[in-house]
Length: 111
Length: 135
Image 1 (cartoon, helix red, strand yellow):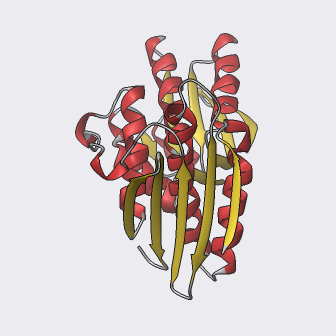
Image 2 (cartoon, each protein chain N blue to C red):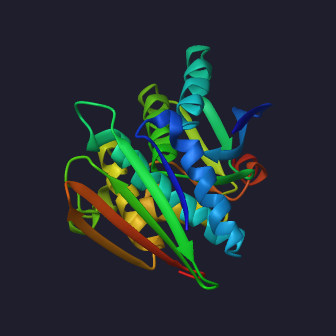
């Protein structure tokens, strides 16, 4: 799994995740976002366009991160889900706590 | 029939999953379905790593076989009895806690596997997962 810092777009800090988020790599995602949060980043878009795979361990990390950000009144959005990853997010009902959008541009247009 | 056996530790997860992915790919399963098989395998294995052996590091073995349209995975561990078929499903309408996300893993296993068989014998859990080329 690789995490790419895309940078600041309008109000949001954009991060892209590539590869697989499984029980081994999920903690890395959590730690990466923890560092951003510690640096004061509070509005995050996570772009999953290049994410091929996510397991319940990955979902757990996304959930923990979302709750951390939301507890500081920040915002986290997830974009560009597709295929099995999209299905897994939908099954888990995460859209009730983490807004899901089609793309980074779609978020920025309404921002 | 290909086989792999390793200690039941997270450090071995990738090796187990690489094995499954290679074997399923060799059976001619499409990438999307191989990815689902990987997911199911991960959920079962992580469950074993986390809960089967509370007092010690135990062992897990996987063997697989298959034909053109079927891939069969057998997972054997000597840990605490656990029958995934009897495990309750998560409440999908209110799955907002981290603990609940683990229940999701079991749900994915049931949803993505064509047929599941479980038997407890000789102090071991024997879980058989059968995957058709399509769900």
